[in-house]
Amino acid sequence: MPSVQHSEASLPSSFDAHHPPEKKYIDDCVHCGFCLPACPTYVLWGNEMDSPRGRIYMIKKASEGEAPLDNRFRQHMDNCLGCMACMSACPSGVLYNKLIEPTRAQIERNTRRSLSDRLFRKMLFATFPYPERLRVLALPLMIYQRFRINALINWFGIWRLLPRRLVALNALLPKLENVFEKLPATVHPRGAPRRRVGMLSGCIQQVFFLRVNAATARVLAAEGCEVVIPPEQGCCGALMLHSGLETDAIEFAKKLIAVFEKANVDTVVINSAGCGSTMKEYGHLLRHDPVWADRAVSFSAKCKDISEFLCELEPQALRNPLECRVAYHDACHLQHAQGVRDQPRRLLKAIPGLDVAEIPEAHLCCGSAGIYNLLEPETAQDLGDRKVSHLVSTHSQAVVSANPGCLLQLMSGAHRQGIGTMPAFHLVEVVDASIRGISAADLLKGDAASSLQTN
Image 1 (tube, rainbow, N blue to C red):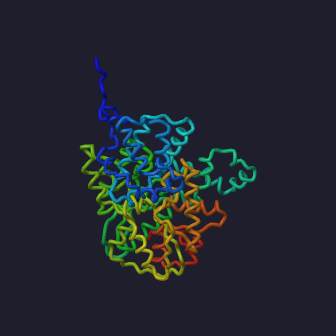
Image 2 (cartoon, rainbow, N blue to C red):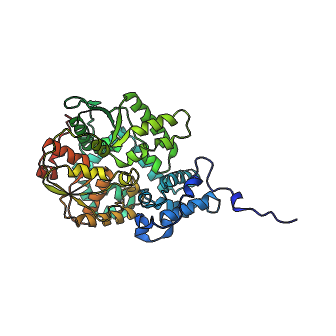
Image 3 (cartoon, one colour):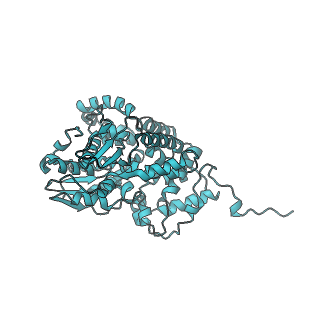
């Protein structure tokens, strides 16, 4: 009896049946290589399997049953920062985000990580998406900073004995202040109301970067917007979605949609690039849910980055001069995932006296990438050092970005390289300082952020 010959098409997929990477997105890649110089890990290592087309090839082979979801496969996917620079570079329009995200979800469901990896990830996801838990955690951390315990640990050389991930977590810890304060549920506009907008307060953002949220609310109010900040809002799900925790991301998305539906706003304004890129993709995330699919599409259509929104409004608030030179750093999930690149520059260049410098290799990720700099600290530090060296070459007095995580990564890199602390500001903080008439000197020494008043 002749043996049965199995075709490639008959081989079972290595992925399970729940939302595997779709063939139509896999087949869009023609393996031309335009993505290679845009990919941070390929630039660092020159390894084909750590490039977008290499990962897509592995995803294709896994979907055809020719590559197992083993440790090697998982490591190449873990190495990806998810910066989406390949999407900007790709002439074929490959939607890489719709490949890497479902692949990571498959990995989390179908592979088993080491005990230390599982525990560290559980610690992050048990705290970061929950503001009240972060506030509880912030209390001992404030004591840690206030009494300079870090300096004592350094003196004894204890950090050299600890896991790199904990060392990275310590290096990225921002200065903690006002962590128990909250913004009001509504901020009234200056003058006649022009728009009614909702504002995402975020999870980590509302605890560790309250000054950015306060500046956002002030700028929106100065431009005639009634700003609604629902106190019951929570995490948008970005951290989970980018890490393969699809079910958790979906639940957070549904809760956020419901909150802002109740708020009845024209636009949902976002000041964190990673959050914005995820919220704009809720329609895809919930596409198979008959109850939520249309609601998600409607919600996503209302979502705009703060720079997008301000550029659509005819400015009414006077911009006062800021005589200083700043370097603008593109957040990956703003320029690549959302395609927002010109608007931040337009806002900064509209400020009299402000000299805006471009950073070489602006397309390349700084290594922050959500929680990538905690999960893959060595790679993140290499990218951070590379970005900081380019930043120094601009001879700027401060760095400006549209994502708080990027700012922490750059400040950490500057400290690590021993070049001192370069002031780092969110884009909206600079616009706010100009509207309020804060001098460049006061902005650079941090006095502009001292007030959390929203009016």
